[in-house]
Image (cartoon, rainbow, N blue to C red; front, side):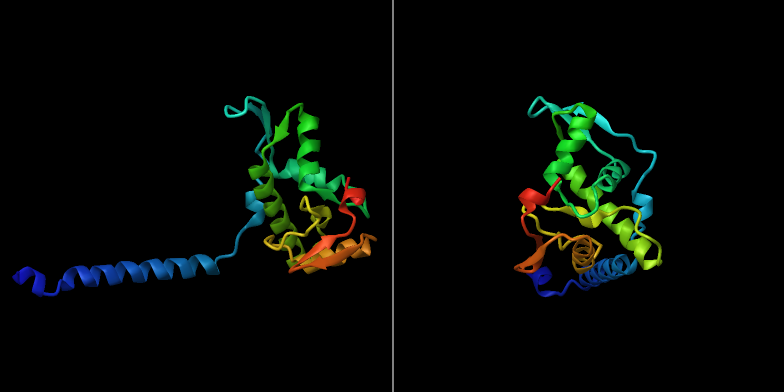
Length: 176
């Protein structure tokens, strides 16, 4: 009974110290700038593996492979994520391309382009031509959606607003 009534100051102080260090760690991480160019990993090679779950051939792309495919999209047209994955799979003789890796690498490419623009350099890849399967411009990319919408309009692509996101009008006919 005595132990239950006495405050446990040693453990309480330790918990506060741990909580304080966790909080400062998050704040420090938020303040750090992401080096998108380091994430491009030019030494990485694409690989075609057998998907154990479905039994088909799965392409594991690289960031620069996706960037090269995005660079091949002509001015004034767009390409959906599904069409990009299908083109990559056909190019490497795979049944499909990993959607998770494709999404992560597209975000990395968008971050590298945002870094280029922040340093007043020319964009290396026209990542603004890449749209979601429904024609929407992603709002979670490091490259601003308004900038991407402006670039698409300059190229003659028709856009509209749908909720909080920009959307390519007639994506079924305009997509490559």
